[in-house]
Image (tube, rainbow, N blue to C red; front, side):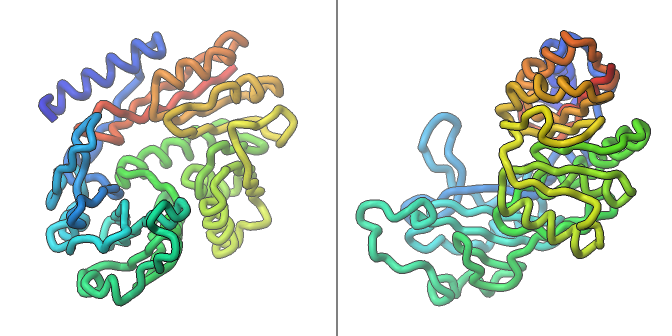
Length: 331
């Protein structure tokens, strides 16, 4: 945050150019460079006061206002009571208007020494939180209050996401990204699209809604469960195949497709591209939050005759060194 917006964008541009050995075609700016983040995760101190840790330390910093969090999240932080004993982490999840709070305890990872036999948190423990303007409260996997579902409208799809399902932190930039993906895939006129690391269908459900046959593969049971529910609600469950499995272990022949989408976590998708290009798809669209991992992962495709025909940078995480990159490879 010590850099102004122009300097941040220039730094991002140069980083992507160095990683891919090619300048980006464009940078899509975030509509807001502060107050944009729709999910924040914090930890309590010994008194239950929430905050962040200083970088590379366990020094707790109490937080009642976060400059990059959305206004509705900051409104909750301002009045949030100290967390009950046993809570080790809290996530505030916004859909742009309302906030769901997810608390996680030691029991979620199994009882530790001194915790055996301790009961779970109840509504009585959390009575101070039900007076706050929250859409829902979840402790581990149990709904304590209200509605635990986060409803997001993205490119014509209303997602209903459970409290453990991932979604992008910048709602406005994600809408721009999904819209671009739809345009690119539609112009390619694919017979079938393979969406690896598909999550709850952020990228592939809008394609299915437009009549494009799609196969989704995602390891998270929660995410694929949410995707199936959305597909059924929209009457698309017969046209999309949802596979709960490790996309990182994809093997050539696991699915028929002529266009592939990848949206892996920060570690990337080592080895996956080598499997994809065995069937010579006409295009691979890679969405990455780590340009260095992207550059590593696409080397086999570039060595096999695929070229980068589109490279866009999305300012998904303003005020941070991170970015989102869209890379289209065609042959």
